[in-house]
Image (cartoon, rainbow, N blue to C red; front, side, top):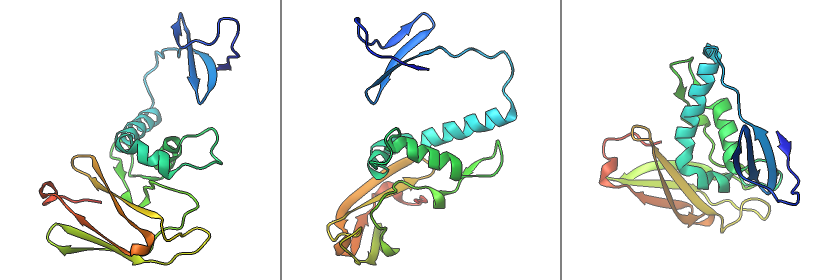
Amino acid sequence: MARFIKGITGSYQGKIGNIVGSSWRGIDYIRSLPKKSSKAASEDQLAQRMKFGMTTSFLKSIKDVLMLGFSDNKQKTKTGYNVAFQQFINNAFQGAYPNFTIDYTVVKIASGSLASLIGLQTTESAPKVLTLAWDPIGNRFNAFDDDQVLVILYDQVDNLFFAYEGASRVDATMDIVLPDSYTGKTIV
Protein backbone atom coordinates (compact mmCIF):
# COMPACT_ATOMS: atom_id res chain seq x y z
CA MET A 1 0.00 0.00 0.00
CA ALA A 2 1.30 3.45 -0.84
CA ARG A 3 0.33 6.91 0.28
CA PHE A 4 -0.93 9.09 -2.55
CA ILE A 5 -0.02 12.78 -2.58
CA LYS A 6 -2.55 14.65 -4.70
CA GLY A 7 -1.14 15.56 -8.07
CA ILE A 8 -2.49 17.76 -10.82
CA THR A 9 -5.51 15.45 -11.23
CA GLY A 10 -6.17 15.13 -7.48
CA SER A 11 -6.85 11.89 -5.67
CA TYR A 12 -9.21 9.20 -6.84
CA GLN A 13 -11.39 6.57 -5.28
CA GLY A 14 -12.31 3.27 -6.83
CA LYS A 15 -10.72 0.61 -8.97
CA ILE A 16 -8.69 1.20 -12.08
CA GLY A 17 -7.36 -2.06 -13.50
CA ASN A 18 -5.68 -3.82 -10.63
CA ILE A 19 -5.19 -0.67 -8.51
CA VAL A 20 -7.62 0.58 -5.87
CA GLY A 21 -7.64 4.20 -4.67
CA SER A 22 -9.27 5.17 -1.38
CA SER A 23 -9.19 7.59 1.52
CA TRP A 24 -9.25 6.96 5.27
CA ARG A 25 -9.24 9.72 7.90
CA GLY A 26 -8.10 12.24 5.31
CA ILE A 27 -5.19 10.11 4.06
CA ASP A 28 -5.35 9.17 0.38
CA TYR A 29 -3.78 5.86 -0.54
CA ILE A 30 -3.57 3.32 -3.33
CA ARG A 31 -3.09 -0.42 -3.20
CA SER A 32 -3.17 -3.33 -5.56
CA LEU A 33 -5.96 -5.88 -5.67
CA PRO A 34 -5.29 -8.96 -3.56
CA LYS A 35 -4.19 -12.08 -5.39
CA LYS A 36 -6.47 -15.08 -5.34
CA SER A 37 -4.95 -18.11 -3.66
CA SER A 38 -5.24 -21.52 -5.24
CA LYS A 39 -4.39 -23.28 -1.97
CA ALA A 40 -7.10 -24.44 0.40
CA ALA A 41 -7.35 -22.47 3.63
CA SER A 42 -5.57 -23.94 6.64
CA GLU A 43 -7.43 -24.72 9.85
CA ASP A 44 -5.86 -21.65 11.50
CA GLN A 45 -7.10 -19.47 8.63
CA LEU A 46 -10.59 -20.95 8.89
CA ALA A 47 -10.57 -20.38 12.65
CA GLN A 48 -9.51 -16.75 12.21
CA ARG A 49 -12.16 -16.20 9.53
CA MET A 50 -14.80 -17.63 11.84
CA LYS A 51 -13.66 -15.36 14.71
CA PHE A 52 -13.66 -12.38 12.34
CA GLY A 53 -17.20 -13.14 11.17
CA MET A 54 -18.53 -13.68 14.70
CA THR A 55 -16.88 -10.46 15.89
CA THR A 56 -18.31 -8.44 13.01
CA SER A 57 -21.77 -9.91 13.54
CA PHE A 58 -21.64 -9.11 17.27
CA LEU A 59 -20.26 -5.56 17.10
CA LYS A 60 -21.74 -4.08 13.92
CA SER A 61 -25.07 -3.03 15.43
CA ILE A 62 -23.43 -1.04 18.27
CA LYS A 63 -20.76 0.64 16.15
CA ASP A 64 -21.88 4.14 17.19
CA VAL A 65 -21.69 3.20 20.88
CA LEU A 66 -18.19 1.76 20.37
CA MET A 67 -17.04 4.88 18.53
CA LEU A 68 -18.06 6.86 21.62
CA GLY A 69 -16.96 4.32 24.23
CA PHE A 70 -13.46 3.86 22.84
CA SER A 71 -12.89 7.42 21.65
CA ASP A 72 -9.53 8.61 22.90
CA ASN A 73 -7.17 11.26 21.61
CA LYS A 74 -4.26 8.84 21.99
CA GLN A 75 -5.72 6.56 19.30
CA LYS A 76 -4.79 8.66 16.31
CA THR A 77 -4.84 5.90 13.70
CA LYS A 78 -7.59 3.68 15.14
CA THR A 79 -11.31 4.24 15.39
CA GLY A 80 -13.24 3.24 18.48
CA TYR A 81 -14.74 0.38 16.49
CA ASN A 82 -11.24 -0.84 15.52
CA VAL A 83 -10.11 -0.85 19.16
CA ALA A 84 -13.26 -2.70 20.28
CA PHE A 85 -12.87 -5.18 17.43
CA GLN A 86 -9.26 -5.92 18.37
CA GLN A 87 -10.13 -6.32 22.05
CA PHE A 88 -13.05 -8.60 21.22
CA ILE A 89 -11.26 -10.87 18.74
CA ASN A 90 -8.26 -11.26 21.08
CA ASN A 91 -10.11 -11.88 24.34
CA ALA A 92 -13.77 -12.84 23.95
CA PHE A 93 -13.53 -16.32 22.44
CA GLN A 94 -13.59 -19.60 24.31
CA GLY A 95 -13.20 -23.11 22.95
CA ALA A 96 -11.57 -24.41 19.82
CA TYR A 97 -12.48 -24.11 16.14
CA PRO A 98 -15.20 -24.76 14.99
CA ASN A 99 -16.94 -24.66 18.40
CA PHE A 100 -16.13 -21.11 19.47
CA THR A 101 -18.31 -19.47 22.10
CA ILE A 102 -18.28 -15.88 23.33
CA ASP A 103 -17.29 -15.12 26.92
CA TYR A 104 -19.59 -12.17 27.62
CA THR A 105 -17.83 -11.40 30.91
CA VAL A 106 -14.76 -10.05 29.07
CA VAL A 107 -16.56 -8.08 26.35
CA LYS A 108 -15.83 -4.36 26.66
CA ILE A 109 -17.93 -1.64 25.04
CA ALA A 110 -15.98 1.26 26.51
CA SER A 111 -12.55 2.11 27.82
CA GLY A 112 -11.25 5.45 28.85
CA SER A 113 -10.44 7.80 31.66
CA LEU A 114 -13.86 7.84 33.35
CA ALA A 115 -14.18 5.62 36.41
CA SER A 116 -16.57 2.69 36.27
CA LEU A 117 -19.64 2.59 38.48
CA ILE A 118 -18.71 1.25 41.91
CA GLY A 119 -20.82 -1.40 43.65
CA LEU A 120 -23.07 -2.02 40.65
CA GLN A 121 -25.94 -4.40 41.42
CA THR A 122 -28.84 -5.52 39.26
CA THR A 123 -32.15 -6.87 40.52
CA GLU A 124 -35.57 -7.55 39.08
CA SER A 125 -37.49 -5.17 41.33
CA ALA A 126 -40.87 -5.91 39.76
CA PRO A 127 -42.09 -8.04 36.87
CA LYS A 128 -40.29 -6.80 33.74
CA VAL A 129 -38.44 -4.05 35.67
CA LEU A 130 -34.67 -4.27 35.94
CA THR A 131 -33.21 -2.01 38.63
CA LEU A 132 -29.56 -1.04 38.62
CA ALA A 133 -28.04 0.48 41.74
CA TRP A 134 -24.53 1.77 42.43
CA ASP A 135 -22.61 3.88 44.89
CA PRO A 136 -22.76 7.54 43.77
CA ILE A 137 -19.09 8.13 44.56
CA GLY A 138 -17.67 10.98 42.56
CA ASN A 139 -14.48 12.96 42.43
CA ARG A 140 -13.12 15.88 40.45
CA PHE A 141 -10.68 13.79 38.38
CA ASN A 142 -12.54 10.92 36.69
CA ALA A 143 -15.95 10.37 38.33
CA PHE A 144 -18.16 13.41 37.88
CA ASP A 145 -21.68 13.71 39.29
CA ASP A 146 -23.15 14.51 35.86
CA ASP A 147 -21.59 11.49 34.05
CA GLN A 148 -24.35 9.88 31.98
CA VAL A 149 -25.04 6.17 32.50
CA LEU A 150 -25.59 4.09 29.34
CA VAL A 151 -26.80 0.52 29.74
CA ILE A 152 -26.53 -1.95 26.86
CA LEU A 153 -28.56 -5.17 27.05
CA TYR A 154 -27.86 -8.02 24.65
CA ASP A 155 -30.28 -10.72 23.52
CA GLN A 156 -28.07 -13.73 22.71
CA VAL A 157 -30.68 -15.69 20.77
CA ASP A 158 -31.71 -12.91 18.38
CA ASN A 159 -28.31 -11.10 18.38
CA LEU A 160 -29.98 -7.80 19.31
CA PHE A 161 -28.71 -4.92 21.42
CA PHE A 162 -30.88 -2.49 23.33
CA ALA A 163 -29.53 0.78 24.75
CA TYR A 164 -31.01 2.54 27.77
CA GLU A 165 -29.99 5.89 29.17
CA GLY A 166 -31.47 8.57 31.38
CA ALA A 167 -29.56 8.44 34.66
CA SER A 168 -26.38 10.09 35.85
CA ARG A 169 -23.71 8.90 38.28
CA VAL A 170 -25.16 10.91 41.19
CA ASP A 171 -28.64 9.33 40.76
CA ALA A 172 -27.29 6.00 42.13
CA THR A 173 -30.15 4.04 40.58
CA MET A 174 -31.83 3.38 37.26
CA ASP A 175 -35.00 1.44 36.43
CA ILE A 176 -35.36 -0.22 33.03
CA VAL A 177 -38.84 -1.35 32.04
CA LEU A 178 -38.38 -4.39 29.83
CA PRO A 179 -40.79 -4.98 26.93
CA ASP A 180 -42.98 -8.09 26.74
CA SER A 181 -40.70 -9.47 24.02
CA TYR A 182 -38.00 -10.07 26.68
CA THR A 183 -40.14 -12.61 28.52
CA GLY A 184 -38.31 -15.93 28.83
CA LYS A 185 -35.10 -14.65 27.24
CA THR A 186 -31.60 -14.52 28.65
CA ILE A 187 -30.29 -10.99 28.45
CA VAL A 188 -26.65 -10.12 29.23
